[in-house]
Length: 450
Image 1: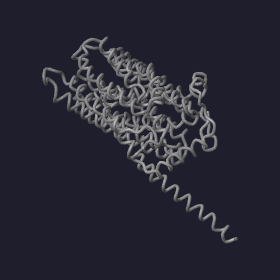
Image 2 (image 1 turned 180 degrees about the vertical axis):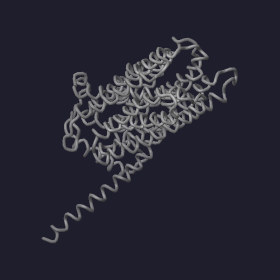
Image 3 (image 1 turned 135 degrees about the vertical axis):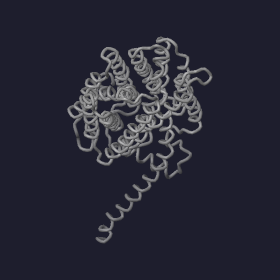
Image 4 (image 1 turned 30 degrees about the horizontal axis):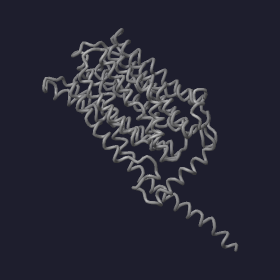
């Protein structure tokens, strides 16, 4: 009997090892099925959202728009986000991700193409607002969707892999925009910036149609998983839900939740930096001496490639260490300091332009690397309908930073002729995001608690 008792732990270790191996195998299959396609959709969304930053290099002269008009138009996209993101996520929970993602993707592609017809600031503002309204729900919808598939300890890496597609879009989008605007200008009597909107809108419409046939709403519906693989995935999710303990399910309590508003404040500060870089990187590159669309595109591509690596590496490291606070705060602080350094070196005459580009790249890497880690926090507090609405609420309110930051940068550029003052302001706000996490989110066992 004593021999049997001594052998039991060994048998348990073998069983646990087998379970871990089966789970790892199942999640490799899940990841290969879900993340590449969702990543492609995010690349298309990002291209259609931020190609305005490259179109600006020709569009402003063509339409006689000011920097302030551009800044308001770039930012008004996020007002559409704000008004329609929560309803979209509520609809996703009701009708499923497949139908929701199809609708969103087709509609934003159509609006992107319609931007070729812009001739007045009012038309520009309206279409940018509609682009935000139709894209609203995609990003928080995917965040919610991935929680249906991945337990907590696997989410940061999954989030990081998905979100790195925005950096990949920067890698692809810069050279692609430069090529289209350089080579297509004058074709059929249209400007290069008009062809940019057309050629980057068409793939989104096609991808939205494909989403209907390809996507699976939940693990139990996945015909591409075996019965054993479904069981392994569902068991992992059930264990995770039990380990997380009681969380809020009632979405009506969100507006009075101190935790939710703390998360909104944190993400708002981070998105001030992210939106500034997203919409002003082409201008920053141009201001340090690179004026052709092609050179601007390739330099932006290198910066975004570094950002993609940072997102994936930092997300995976956060999962391995089961730590969120410093994996968010460290990159955010580095991003803020680098943005302030960028403002300093851009104001010094005679410095090599590569110094400014390095500071810009480090700022982008730090800012982007903090984003996937942040999304570990909401699902530690929210579940069910509260998670569906909460994720959308956090993202939609926080994305008002995407409205304000580009507009303020445009006003500053109009007034001073430089972006350096705006960069100092945004750097302070980004560091504040890290301070809010370190002060407001305390470590509690294996969780983070507000």
